[in-house]
Image 1 (tube, rainbow, N blue to C red):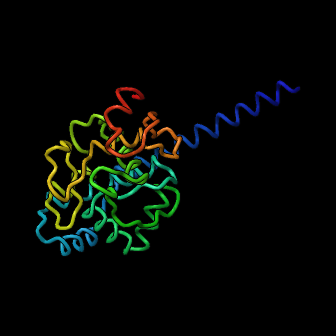
Image 2 (cartoon, one colour):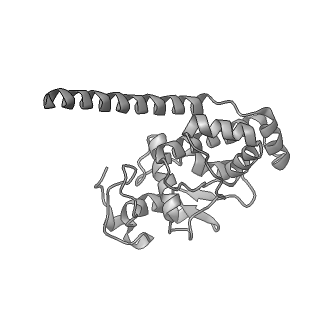
Image 3 (tube, rainbow, N blue to C red):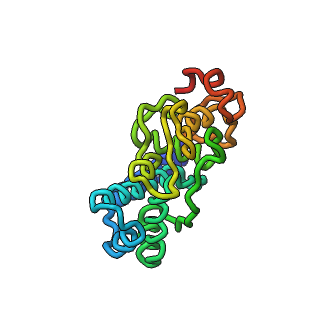
Amino acid sequence: MNLYFLLIGAAMLSLIYFAIKANKARQLKYIEQYHFHKGIRHKLSQKHPQLSEQQLDMVFQGLRDYFRICHRAKKRRVSMPSQVIDDAWHEFILSTRIYEKFCTKALGRFLHHTPAEAMSTPTLAKDGIKRSWRLACALEQINPKKPVRLPLVFAMDGLLNIANGFTYQLDCKKSSSGSYCASHIGCSSGCGGSSDSSSDSSGCSGNSGDSSGCSSGCGGGGD
C-alpha cells in the first residue's frame, strides 16, 4: 500500500514538474513573438527622433531580450544596462493595461520598473549588473569571462550613440572616458562573491569584485 501511494505521489510530482516546464516554455514563446504596440514605438521615436525605423526595431529587440533575461532570473534583481531600452520600457509601462497583460502572460507577475543602471565605476560592477551580464551572455551564447562581443542589451547605447547612455567596451585598455569595461563584469561576476548561489552564477569565487583580482582570481575555471 505504501508503495502504491509513493508511486501516485511520484506521478503527481512529475505531472506538476512538466506542467511548470510547459508553462515556462509558453511564457518564453510569448515574449519572443510579442509585437509591441505602435503607440509605444511612436512615443519612443518622439523621445529619440534621431533613430531610424531599423534602429527602433533594434531597441525593441533589446527590450524583448531584457524580458527574456528577467524571465530566466525569476524574481532576482536584474539591472537594466541601456538607457534607450529603459526609455522604451518606460513608455511600455505607461500603457498600463497592455503592460499588465503582457507581464501576466510573459512572467506570471507584474514586473516593476527599475531605472537604467551602469557599473558603480568603470571597473566595478554591482550584483544587478553582474546578473544582467551573465544572463545576457547566456542568452547569446557568449562566454561572460572571455567575451568576443557585447550582448545586445549592453551594446545598444554605444551602437546608437545615445546621449547620456551607458557605453561598454570589450578592450579595457582602449576604453574612452565615460565608458565601462565589460570584461570586468564577467570576471567580477565570478570573483565578486555574489550572494546569489543560483544557476546563473559563473561558479568562480575567492577575490574581491574589483579589477585587481580579475586575471588571477578566475582563470579558466567554472565554465
